Length: 394
Image (cartoon, rainbow, N blue to C red):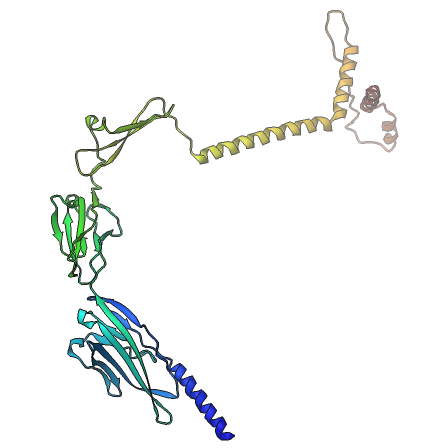
């Protein structure tokens, strides 16, 4: 029974290790001539198995040959025509993929990845995986021109560039021309990037590029022409004579405002839009927004002050009803004492006697003072009585 359990454990362990050490990668892959390609060969490392050797072989025309070997002594490239073109990652456990640079047509064939591991019981385990590679030549595509950071309109004296980009089997040969395709173009460069260290106004014009590779088609592809404009910041805006702008002038009349016309300058490769303003009526100036806000705030403040003053005056009149009644009573008394001889009215002024004496008072003088007739007191009493009488009448 124990032997059976041990055998089952050994079988399960073997099956599990086989699953972990299974090689994965591509079955078929297509490479572009003169480019790079990576043939995948990956497995999951296990502590129970130690990698011993890695061998890559190429089978072309039924004649297999070892092209790469890795063992305890290091990496070895077995064929001279692959020298400096083959490599395998060194610091990625479980990754023994083969990278081939600068592909040639003879590199097409069946590549086999063979890995050998050593188990803890000194037994060896080997796995293989085959990938078919086909190297093809790809004709160059139509190139595209990309401007620098400043775009196609650049100030004078600035530094910029134009880049010609195309796809296809390398190497790709680029050529730059100033002008238009099919016209009297002038060659200016044989590089993919056309550099301008310090732009001048003479650099203004149209540019295009050509792309070519050594594919079997031998077709030269041309890009579309682009317009590069160099602005001279020291010169004023371009002016156009009336005779040149008559045919290409559009006007947009606005009632009560200025008439704005737009013209295109002709007679050169650069078409510059020109705006002309013709005054039709009186110009209207608009106040800034902050002035309008200030005026509105001042108007609101003035209204608040006026309302406050009116309310205060009304409240003052309501707080003094007795004074108004008293004055009305006095006016009635004066009208009653007027004589109608000459149509004149004489106002009676009350006479007030001064009872203050410079001599010092005697002991019995307090009683005398209290008995004396006080005219001011009588006037005050009469005024209060008349006030209450007027209030009753109302």
